Length: 161
Image 1 (spheres, one colour):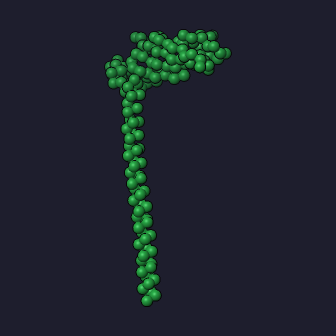
Image 2 (image 1 turned 90 degrees about the vertical axis):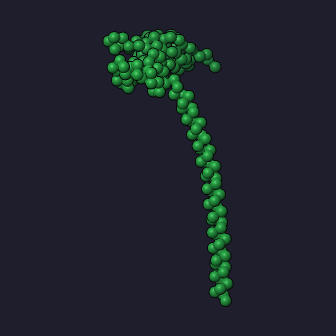
Image 3 (image 1 turned 180 degrees about the horizontal axis):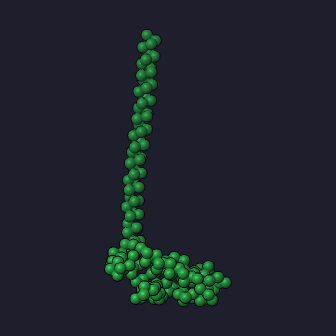
């Protein structure tokens, strides 16, 4: 008789414990489904942002890529050369930067910080002297010898805040 009661109590305990475990796992699954849905929505938003940001980028501009490819250039190497050529303009003597049309207001030099090649003709770059900063639209071209030429089309110096 005691063995029967003990067996029933043990089965009852097992049933209640299993039910709690099952309910907990169902709750975790449902909350993870909500999290997955939330993450999928975030991924879609990020994909839209990537598409918007890549719209003005040489990497996603097939026409610009084909423009240089049709002229016989190794495009990856060329873009690296263009970026290096623009960054090499930071190595200058004197007070005036060869491309940046503004003189430093501090004791440091004006330097180009970052560059984005937009297409086969334009680059957007930002510059700073440590206190003031600005942006400029640079037109680049290759002459018959394959030498790079840079010309600033527009520039903007942001006011101090």
